[in-house]
Length: 217
Image (cartoon, rainbow, N blue to C red; front, side, top):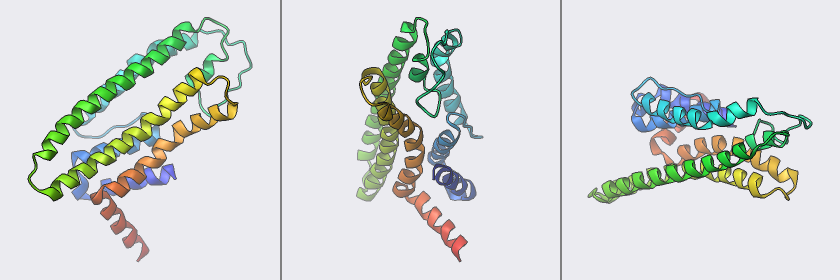
């Protein structure tokens, strides 16, 4: 469903000239990120923002990755997740993990706080612009687009906050809870994003209906 949903979004945006606008380029970037887990590119000026975001992530996580390479892994190499989660790897280490443990938690907190502040400031400007629009219909349309963006942000941040808190403070919980949160973090955002934007974005929804209709008849 993740593969089909995101590929459909990319296909509709690519084949419909009317959707070749900055907002839909951002949706395409989101779909590519969901598919490739961090590898995305677009052939427009927007790629500068993408490079900045990816560089920030790469530079901030580099100290953790370097230290992981030199740890002594003395415990059985059995991970509780279907991917190499950082907190999961630390459980296999017999070396001093205090730096990785505290740095990773501080990185998550700082990143989330910084992003939250930037998102809040952005929406303050957006709301000022929307409220200045004379037409009631245009205001409602703009606010509906904002709702889609907010839903996408929540769909991404809530699972990552939950996963971090479970691994940090939920050591007494069943291993099943850790596995479940890990899979939700990986699968829930790319599953929900195509649904959110297909339902909330009128242009994308109408193009999808048109595409399905052309395939059925």
